[in-house]
Length: 220
Image (cartoon, rainbow, N blue to C red; front, side):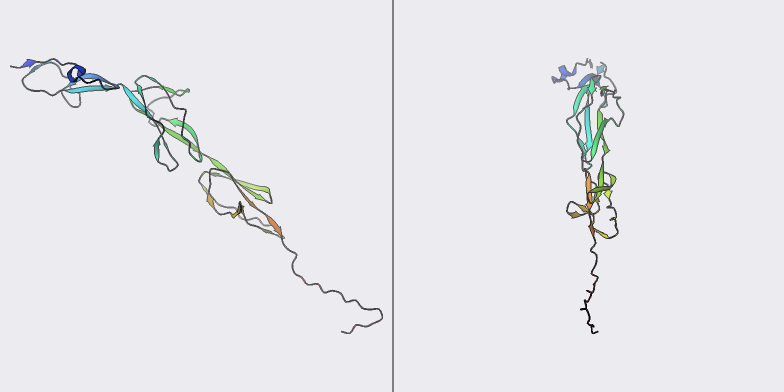
């Protein structure tokens, strides 16, 4: 003959503490915990599976570093469903870029104007968005500014053609003391300078006049 067995709580049966951030939902006859167990006459052994419902989820923050490698910013935060959550104000720095915002790309939550949202029954991920910075390349001739070009960070900078001036020779464009060559735009403004030097008047020969004494002929 069989016996009828009633189920007991998970804690009482296992003598283990409840799982943090989970709620015990009962015993099930399948591994997927879709078929709840109900007391019945048992003629042989029966395996039961504990069902759990997650009650807290994670909020995490990520960004791409200077090498474009995905990196977590700070530690993962855990909140219970329905908790009020405030999006971080702290953010990573990235050379050549200005931080814009933390963006929930999956659009799982709606963040209000104060940066708050209600914790859903899902993990939430925020990704940092950045705006690329622009910097100036300024050209000066004899100390006077003659033009400025604007470039995005890390873009290719092509040096301007050298200027010309009649009667003068240009030194060439210089960055500091070095000759200016094409380069990648750094996260800083750059000044490129040059100078004009006046050309010499040339090596023309002038014959000195011959002075003749009065009353005398000069033999050729």
